[in-house]
Length: 104
Image (spheres, rainbow, N blue to C red):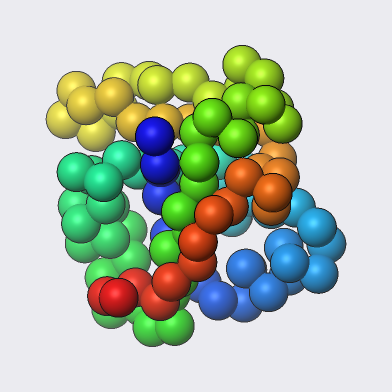
């Protein structure tokens, strides 16, 4: 399965240099890295990133992520009673299988 993380290009560039993504400011505040499923992606973009430019979408392979951070990805009830994927660790970049500009 693939899950998705929307973030500004600057955060991705910093993560690429560091070798891992430790989370955005909201991730740090909440204690986990927020992801969306394919069906949730448009809603997340509209609710949390409206009007922002130069955004990227990370495509993260959950099987690879579980190999690198076993048991750290949880599906938890959030917005509107939907289950969202939350990662309780840093995101190892080896689990990112594709990076694309929003809208591509």
